[in-house]
Image (cartoon, rainbow, N blue to C red):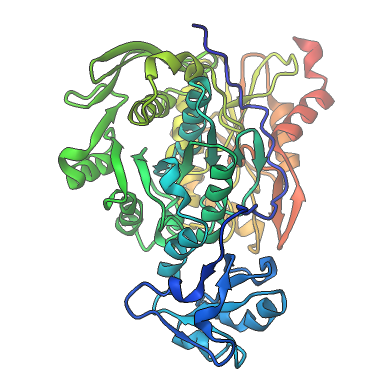
Length: 526
């Protein structure tokens, strides 16, 4: 039977919106939510034991009538200070810790707990009817590849006729409806609400990106995972995590027993270490064809234009597979997706054509206006990802590699020189520019990248230029391109905005690149 191609390249991320909530659930008595050791009810009137809870949120601006408002302690302020606002919007009680209780208006029913974040996920799950128990939750964590893998898993689910959902960086999808949530892994109350809506709408399996922030901040608590999968680990987010060990420990939380089937890519040392920690339960995956892996890719043919082809060899299985997303590293993502589908009860050989045909927004996405050179937009925003993208494009580039790259502000500063060096070593022309500077000085971010780029010996790096303004840098890359070259616009991928000084301005690398090519009249040269 032919399997329809699931092309997700046209998914557009809309502006962030309020997360929908499930309907038809019976309200839960506040007293029934006090289940953890140390939980206790306080408050003068009404009797906290008689209060009925219909929903939960930690954002005072999103309170709905009947909600339990969670006052979460933060680094700069305590969320409980917004209790009055939440009560005015209809909250019937406040969940907080002893420090937050002092900030709650007198007479308000309070559910006291020692760790508010630890309580949020399980409590939200109870309020919304334990939705993950009615879903096959397929969680994917790792530094790179989470988005691609989850999109490929969703493509396989759709091809198998499984009503599916997706939660991740590019978008959240409930069937065919697309939402944009605030984080890769939304806050626990929003995640549980989303899962409840998915249950209401007949979804039976969900591919979910599980970020290190989400795990460390307990946003995934209260979720029963059918599968927990690991892609890889490389430097990122060290603005939040103390070091790579702390970063790894956060990722490893997905494999602490909450996932029924752990599936681990073992082509890097972190994956092999994680597999050793998990032990015999681990399903191992190797795109490099490592002997002893449960799943292996063999006879790999990687093409930065045509995508990848390989044979997937798994438990009593051997079948043709592939991935349309260019870059040899996407063989790993496709193989991992097939292993996840197999664990979810889907015949991977049957849906392999759909997985092989699926595309992912902003991941090695071509922009073609008839120009005589290759133009690509990619989300690569980590040193290892930049190296991988340039290595993949080098194989199909007759001329020069031209790269536009910036780094985000208010994020891991240590990776900026590393990204600059990786791009300078891999390209003939590097245009250092802005990404999302956020609250930082864009020039200071560029300077750190330039320091790394220029640290590479002159004979081992390409030409390096600094250009103030991302649109100007994209235009300069197009102006410099000649027949046979490749232009890579890296770092933002699918993003539709650029955050500068606290304001997000409309900006899409794909739109800017297409416009620059048209303005240059390059299409006439083809």
